[in-house]
Length: 145
Image 1 (tube, rainbow, N blue to C red):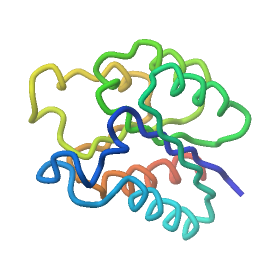
Image 2 (image 1 turned 90 degrees about the vertical axis):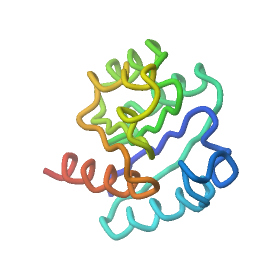
Image 3 (image 1 turned 180 degrees about the horizontal axis):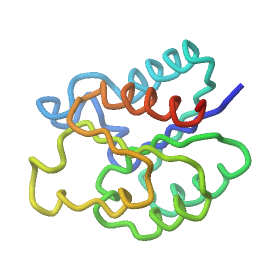
């Protein structure tokens, strides 16, 4: 069975509480459960990980090599600031999809630039919690084909 790692970065543990008008009312746990269940429909095992600490995210990405066939990542604010997360994604050479619940290009100017996009196979942004499912479907297509 193929395996995917879903990584969520800083402040995503606050989903359901933080700005529900932007991010919705579902908790991260609820979104993760939806992705895990959808993964089963694709015959994919999905493991989840969340940290607010940049170095822990880097460690998890590095540890994924040889274990996971793909990575889904919503790095939160680290998307726009983290060269080290970008370098980790590049180093492990695992197909990675970048996920955003909001359309980062329709938000504050500093959010328009993603340091991760250049090392990811694709980006899904602006579909709320469905961004996770769309990203999963895209990643499954990449790793199964």
